[in-house]
Image (tube, one colour):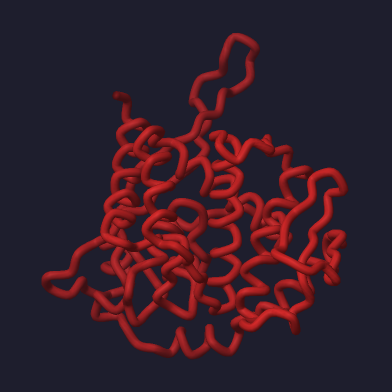
Amino acid sequence: MNYREQIYERINNTIIEKLKSGLVPWKCNMQNFLPMNYISVKWYQGINWLLLNHLDFKSPFYLTFLQTQQKGGKILKGSKGFPVVFWKIMTAQEPNESGSFDQFPLIKISTVFNLSQTTLYDDSKEKELLKQQPTAQNILSDIISNHNPVIDNNFRGQGFYKPATNSICIPPIDQITNPNSYYEVIFHELIHWTGKDLKRESSNDYKSDEYAFEELVAEIGSSYLCSLCGIESEIENQASYIQGWLTRFENDNTFLIKASSYAKKAVNYLLNKSEVLPA
C-alpha cells in the first residue's frame, strides 16, 4: 500500500467509525458556521469539511500546533487534534525529455485543533461571522441569478432533477411544512443539475455504484450549502441510511473521498468560487 492509499484508508476509516457510532458527518453540523482555517479565514471543503463538520466546539476555527505557536498561543493540556488532508501541486525541479516541467500532487495529513482548545480563543470572530452569514434565500437567489437553472416551482410531489430537460421540479416553498426542507431539497437537486456542465457520469439504475455515487455527491453538496446558511440537514430512516453508505465505503475506500471532491467542485461552481483549499 503506497502513501496515498494509506491516507485514503485512514480518512475512510475515520468516517466509517463516525457512521457506526450513529453520526453522519455531512448531516451533523454542530455549529451555525462552516469549519474554517483560523489563519487563512477560508472554509474547509471536500473531505476536510466532512472531517470537521460534526465536531461540537464553541468555535468554527481550526489551526495547527505550529500556527498556534506562531500566533503566540498554546494548545490546552489534554486537547486532542483532528486530521485534515493537505493538497498542493508541486513542480519537478528537473525538466522532462520534452523540456517542460512535470507537475504532481503532494498529499499529506496535518493535525488541527479547534481555536477553543487553545489560549487564543475569544468569540469576537464568531460574532463577526454571524453578521456576515448569508441566508438560504440569499444563496439560492445568487445561484439562480448566476446560472439561471430551469426550476418548475409548481410541481406537486417530491422534488427531483430531470436529466432529459436539465431542469428541476419542486413544490412551492409555501406548500412545504418546514421551509428548511425546501432549501435542503432544492440545493440537493441543484448539485445534480451541475452534473451536465461539470461532466459527471450518471446512471438511472438506482442499484448501481454510479447512481449511489451521484446521490452522495448531491447529499454532501446540499449539506455543505445548508451549513453555509446555518440550516441543519434532516435524516430520515437513519439506521438503513447509514448502513447503505457503510457498505459502499467498506467496499471502496476512495468512494467517499472522490464524492466529496466532486461535491466541492459542484458547490464552488454554483457559488462562482475558486477551488483554493486552506492549509
